[in-house]
Image (spheres, rainbow, N blue to C red):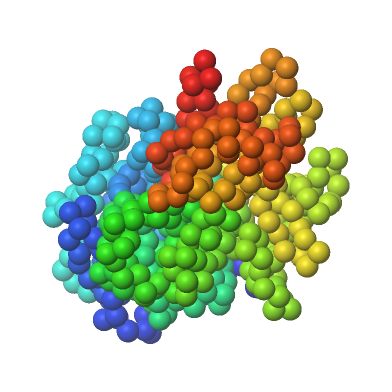
Length: 504
C-alpha cells in the first residue's frame, strides 16, 4: 500500500453512525463524559473555521501544552483541517526545554489547559482548552457554523505534525510528519487491527506517538476509546473495570506499575480485557509471564515502532507461524527492513534500518542530522536479532550499548537475565566508570510482592548462571520503583546519576 491522500484531521467516516460514542473522557477528578462522533466532527470543523478566521497562513504551527482531554483531540483535528501544523509538547519537560520546543517549532499560538497556563512563555499568545472564553475556544457561530467546512486538501508532502523526541543527548528534535504518511498508518493499522467492536483504554500522553496514533486509529475505526488525563495505576485499573475496556495499550513500565497494585487488582474484574498492546520499550519475559497469569485469556502484542518510522513495522508471519514470546514479529509486507552490523554489512544482528510510506520527512531545522541512508532507509539506532524463521527480537539501543573491557554490552540482554529470577519484577542496567574496564554494568531492581527476596549476592550469582562473566552486574541495588521519563519509559540518565552517587 502506497501513501494515502487526504487530510489527516478528516479521519472520521461521516457515513458511519454520528451518534455512536467516540470517547468516554475522564477529567482529573475521575468525572466522565460521553462524546459522540458527530459532536467531535462538528466541533473540529468549528475550530478549524475559527483558526482560518484568525488569518493563519498554511503551515502555521499551533502548539498544544496540556494533559490528555477530548478538547485536545478536537483541537488537533481542527488544526489539521485548517491546513495548519499541530505541535504537541511534553509539559513534563523543564521550563527551559519547553521554551526551546515552542520557539524552535515556530509556534504562533499555544493551546494549554488551566494547569499548564503558567508554563507558556509570557510573550507567546495562548488560550485555555475547553473554556467558554471565545478567544480560547473560538467558534464562527451563526450561519457560518451550519455550513460544511471545506478542509485543506494537502499535497503529498504537506506537513501535519511536528512531534518532539529526545535522543540520548542534546535538545529535543522535531520529527516532521506529513498528512499522507499518517493517513497511510491509520489505513494499514485498520486492516491489521480491527477495533470497531473494541473499547480501547488510552492513558499514555497525547504528546507521544503511542497515544496520538492510537487516538487517530480509534477515530478512523469508529471505535470507542476511554481517555484518561494521564496514567495512574489505580485509575487505570478502575477504568478497565468501570468501562469494561477490552483493548489496552501501554508501555511496559505502566503495566509493571499496575501489577504492583495487588489490592486493587484483587478487587477488580479484569475479565473484559481481550488484547494488550505493549510498545515503545521492550517487554521482559518476567512481565509477560505476570500478564498471562493476571489475564490468562488476553492476547499480548509485543509491538515496535518509532516516532520517526511510524508504528507500522512488524506483524504476523505470512505462513501463519506463531510469533515467539519475545519477538516483535515478522516484517510488515509494506515495510522494507534490513539489519546492518558494525562492519556496515547486512546481517542477522545489527542496527535496524527501514523504509515505508510512514517515514518522517526529517528533523525540523536540523540539517546537521542525517538519519537516512543514501537509498532512503531510516536508521533507527535499535539493534535487533533475526531468527531462522524471519522473526525479529529487540537486543538494545545502540545508544545504550557500552564497552566494558573490550566487550560490547547491551543493557537489555542483562536485564532479561535478571528478570528471569522469580522475585524480580523489573531490572534496569546502566554503566558507570571503571578504572580497569573503562565502564562496568550495575543494576537497579524492583522486586515482586509476595515472593521471597534475594540479597545482592544471591542475585549476582543467579545472573552468572545466565550471562557471561563480563556481563554480570557488579552492583545491584533494590528500589521500590524505577524513575520514569515523561514518555513513561525508564529514565536511564537519572539511574546513572543515582548509581554514581551510590557507588561513591
